[in-house]
Image (cartoon, rainbow, N blue to C red):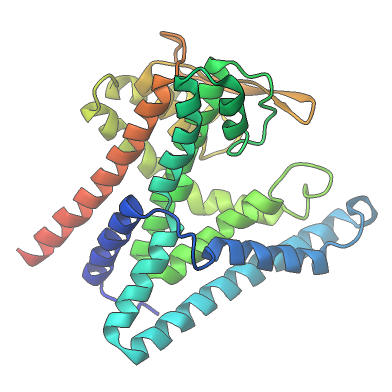
Length: 328
């Protein structure tokens, strides 16, 4: 099943990380995740046509399992066959295809760019623009948010996505190259599309939400360790406070995984994350994480981006060290 040695895979991961640092998400051709989303939408339209309340819980869950398994198998097999064909044409084409598709599963530069779109208008005191752009990256109501709340929403999004958009895809890419990294991205996309606890998806999206939790379980804990290490070398951050925050607050988050990076970043920066969110007119209280040693401000967005990049540098450095050790 494995197409490359771990040394070859590590080199390709380094190349993929550098591509993402320089280029970010491709605008052309169409991003593979968009194609995965189109597949999910099409399959959902076939499996989940009826009113959710008119179908038994067991039937909805079974259909959700069919959606999950079909999407994962389809994504993996298409990517695997594409890689086999590329290798058959020429070994170097196989390397290039593997590197390129791995780079599309990570979003270091994409996260930075999205956060900076919020930060720049904040810096110019253009609150309406900042609210508009933060609305692009969160699902909550942003029309009345002030600077501390806009900052919170942005920091939480970047922190949570250090797992989903950086560590997890690279973790699975190291295990199985682009096919396994793309399978992870398909699982993550399923969770973002159907993994909601509402009337429509509570049972139909149950399998997708749980599987995403399973796939992120180990990478989330690796991310916590990496963020503590990043805080140790990042000016103005506290590694001790980051580690203590994970221990005290991560378990309070409704997700078994998202609380780890969010609490680590909150502790590292000395701010409080979580609190009151409004979704479509409904107020939701999110567990508070970290100690409010000071008020949140726009500079915390920059500090979180810096932590994101230091985590990516640590991963790249770890891969280089592993390769040097193997070749010594």
